Every structure is written in C-alpha cells, then in structure tokens.
Length: 200
Image 1 (cartoon, rainbow, N blue to C red):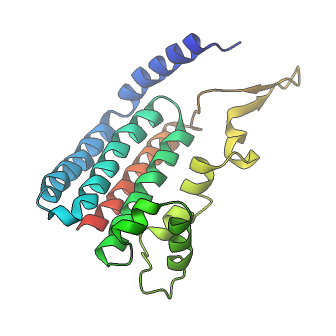
Image 2 (cartoon, rainbow, N blue to C red):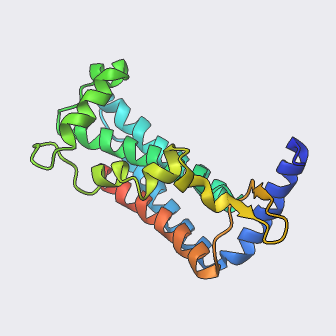
C-alpha cells in the first residue's frame, strides 16, 4: 500500500538514481538552460508594451526546470505535460509577435484562446506555427502523455502477475531500458529548444 510519505521517499530515490543514469544528459540540460538564461537576459530589453513576452520567456524557462525534475522523479507523464505547457507559451509568443494575439485577448484567456488555436491549427492559416502547433496537438507525443488519462497513456504503469493474475499500478514510470530512458529525456529537451525559436 502506497502512502504519501512512501511516495515522497520513492521520488527521492528515483531522482538520485536519475542523476547517475543521466550523467551525460545533464550536460545537455545545462546547455539548454544556458540558452534560456541568455534568452531571459535578452527579453529584459523589451519595451513596456511587450511585458508579456518576458512573462512567456520566463514561463518556458521555469517549465524546463520542472519538466526535467518531474522526469527524473519518475513522473514521465508530468514531464511531458509540463513541456506541452511550455510549447503553448511559445505559440502565444509567436502569435503576439505577429500581432494576431493581442494583450487583451491573452488576458481574456478561456474561449478566446481556444478559438485562436482552432484558427491557427490550419496549415494554410497565415499565423500557422509549423514547428510548434503540430507538436502541441500531436496525441502520440505531448498531448497523449501529458494531458490525457486514456488507457494508452497509463498502460505502462500497469503490470499483471503471471502467476497470480493480479494487476498492479506503479506510481513511478520506468523506461524499457537505458536507451529509451535517455532518449525520452533528450526528446523532451529538444521540444524546449523548439520553443526557443518563438523568441528568436
């Protein structure tokens, strides 16, 4: 039986193991982090009317940290969900830069933002963002793992005993092997690099 304290202890153990397993990948994380730090320094130069660009850049950088930590704690779904949020922030930045997303519409949020995404998901739309919108919507990548609870998105947390037939739910997500573990971590980092283009 899992309790909150045993869950926290399990996350701590998983995080410690990840620091050892992702030794080389940590260098890549630091490299991406450096790009975001440089970006953040650059966005400080925006005019007062572009204050939301500073907010969106900071949101992406914050999500880089929380996504990496979630992955290292064995919460892969959470890591990709956080990454999807960063991609959404980057899409907003692109649309603001093009003048299609006004400060007023951004502040309104809700239905206004949903309608905007619907409009710009059409590849023929002038404000289509080819590097980001498909990534945000692709159900086999960030959308399915990060935002939904269908069986296909949680089945890797389940195991059925060969002898007892008992099905168990695991609170920590393990990759099939070291190659997959490292590959998915780097894939997540790549999405954050994609998001950087919004502020170029």
